[in-house]
Amino acid sequence: MEKGIFVTGSGTGVGKTVIAGAIAATIKAHGLDVGVMKPVASGAKEIDGKLVSEDAVYLKKIIESDDDDDLVVPVRLKPPIAPTMAASQTGVPVDIDKVWRAYEELTKKHDFLVVEGIGGLMVPINDTLFVADLASKMDLPLVIVSSDYLGTINHTLLTVEYARSRNIDIKGIVINMLKGDSGFVREIEKFSSAPVLCTVPYVEKISVENCVYGDIVEYFCREINISKIMRKET
Image 1: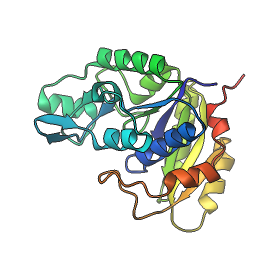
Image 2 (image 1 turned 45 degrees about the vertical axis):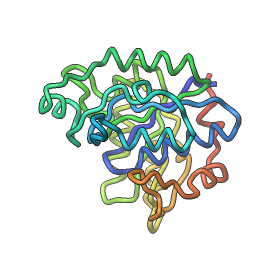
Image 3 (image 1 turned 30 degrees about the vertical axis):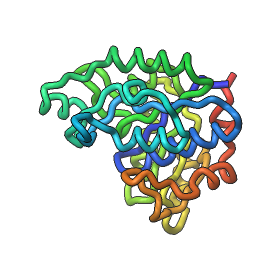
Image 4 (image 1 turned 135 degrees about the vertical axis):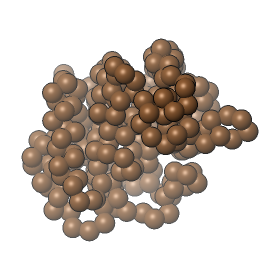
């Protein structure tokens, strides 16, 4: 079995948090001790003098995690922009060593870890690391999340090609927020040669900000072959 997966996106706003949470909850429903992690979060809200990541709150709630916030989301930045820019604006550098320590502790604590990246693979974390470097150092295969928007074929194929150029394994692609004709899904699968693990219809009531996840877990339990994500390729 894999030790975990890294959930990345074809871009920002494709629903990585919703999909990462659904995968984690589905794995938990299969009886495994699963943990969640978002190594770096920007756009954190200040609540009672503490920076809080809404994505991390959502991920923890959907699996009823009691892990400490500093483990789940070790780096929290207030400006809702790329980490390098947010760090520059606030004068708070990204403590990458804190990320590695938290990751090691979570992998020891749980059977399986679902890690959600920030943005896409080429989002810079600091002056030398990109999101792809996090996935590579963690030695986790990718689940790539895309969605129903103009340009999704291009963005998804670029993500697949870049991951392969870095020798990062790809478990497959999840197409989120599907609204209409699914012809582009077949194009993505054909040209990427990566399996589409699941398509998820657009559901208005799901909200990361309000921690509302509707029936997404039940949907995943029905529609996705979770063993393909958990099984280690030989």
